[in-house]
Length: 71
Image (tube, rainbow, N blue to C red; front, side, top):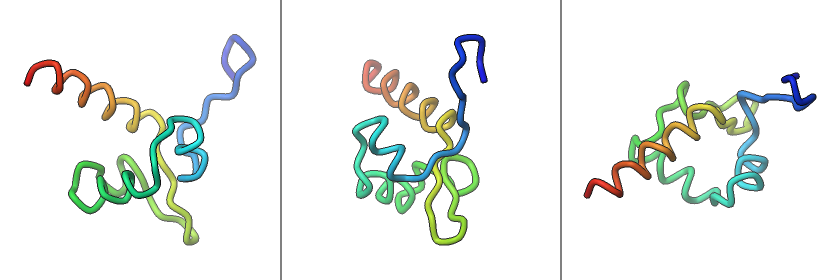
């Protein structure tokens, strides 16, 4: 729990990631297929569930935003 009383999660299930970010399941799976997201870093499968690393997902979003401003 942080100083504001909020719980900080590192890993969330795919459905929660989509709810939090507005991302789609298809977009996440496409990133995995193309290698933009690495299993074990950005995501991982456990017991048939895809888990997303929130910290790494946010880093990826920020890096993509910076890249789109440069191009």
